[in-house]
Amino acid sequence: MGADGAIYVTDWFDPGVGAEPEELATVVTASARGVDGVAFGDVVGANAAIVTVALGVGAWMVAIPFGRRVQRYAVGGLAAGALATVFMWDGAVGRVEATLLVLCYIAFIAAIWAGEHQPPALGEVAELDEQPDDDGRVGTDLAWVLAGLLALTVGSIVLVEGVRQITDIESTQTRLGLTVVGFATAFELVVLAWSASRHGITEAVVAGVVGSYAYNMTMSLGVGALVAPITIDDSTLLHAPLLAMLALMAVAILLAARRGSIGRRDAAVLIAGYPVFVLVALL
Image 1 (spheres, rainbow, N blue to C red):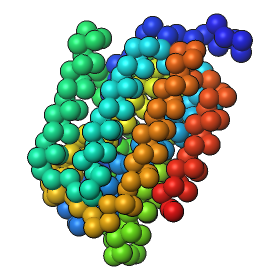
Image 2 (image 1 turned 180 degrees about the vertical axis):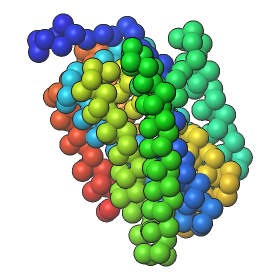
Image 3 (image 1 turned 120 degrees about the vertical axis):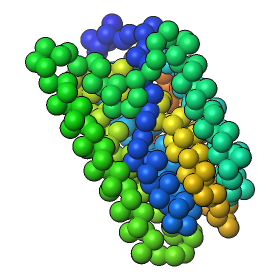
Image 4 (image 1 turned 90 degrees about the horizontal axis):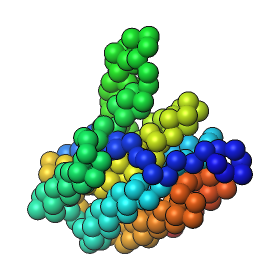
């Protein structure tokens, strides 16, 4: 028990992995429509928002357990981000690289399954698994979750089309992807983190953040590039944001390593990191 009265659980981890249909839909739509700056920008910007705002909001509500086991999975997500960064560094991700990224996500799931001796729950379903079924409403809750995901997915497609109509300048599209589009597609996880922490389902918060970070760097980017190779002319637009995205996850892991949890002070540090990322993305 910490000084603030919170009980920190550091040796247990609910093996949920992120499944982010809104990010996937955004990247696939952007790659198919030739708005490649948005495709790259969304996965990077969404991950920055997830690891700072979503995790920060959840930890501001209540201390989030982030023990050694989940830290290992977070390091795995960081490694996936580093691999994707290498692929994106020259401003182009082709189908061979895309295939490797998808295989990395499959390996990530397999590692969790082997380590936890049970299959990981996907995305928002992980939170439903934590809910008691005393009133028989899980089916209804699942229907609402699916309806919400459908709405978010449609909204992501509309968002890409909106950016395409606003500007055809690659640098502007990329910066909008890194900031506006990235935050918009990550906002659902911010709300989930707030709601899960409010109801004491803290494991869903950290599982969602770690899983979604890995998912966006592998599945979202990989499937998008399988649909159509993603390429931008000025790769330097991505360099600083990519390094910042990796640094933010590293900071979260280091903060958690001190006490096996993310508390309110740590949350303030993480939340403060997001406007820094936005400044980096816009410069």
